[in-house]
Length: 273
Image (cartoon, rainbow, N blue to C red):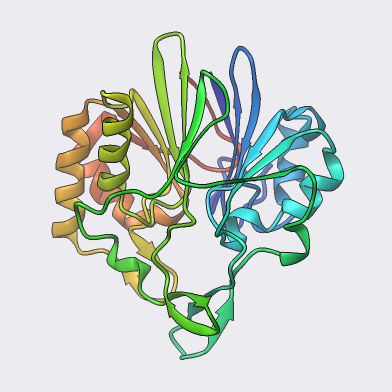
């Protein structure tokens, strides 16, 4: 499998733009997959620089209903009229973020897009084919990240804390290897991996994505929490590539604990597994 990072908070080189968001291109023997589309049209600009033709993508997965992962959806639909777009059925709810100054900012998806014919709504589990599946409704054996603080949704006209039922993850199997990709791991990276283990009966070989150990408004998770996560991740024997909402300082702490078991990916980076 080939994985190209089209959008991330940082850039591998000055040739690539960056923004607070995520977009990954995954190429398998059978499929060309896009996972998230960042906050804007940047995914398309960087895709062109990385020799990725967005019109050739077979399907797009939107991890959850936040605009730093689905803000480029309208542009994707303009560029690709054939790909199926898999979005959780609750992702188009109204989502907000409470900022430090006390104001509430809308961070949801463009509701005008939800009736597009390319969109397929998912729920707890969705098998795209024999090699690729999506799953949500993750059991919370461990507390979710404290950095979810201030992330809200509107339900029946009332604003409440987001429980992230709209967050889905993707699992890809090829040549005896299994890749798990998370968008932000709002449900907790340990809980997501445990849920994967229950579904598949084994741990993933590779994990890529954000772990939500950092919040733009409320700071980072404490080192004790990060150390506990690192200990768990090491026990899975998987190789980890993290990014985006993990945050640079929490990543440095994970790296201190995990060594070569974890690396950071930036816009413009490529991985072959």
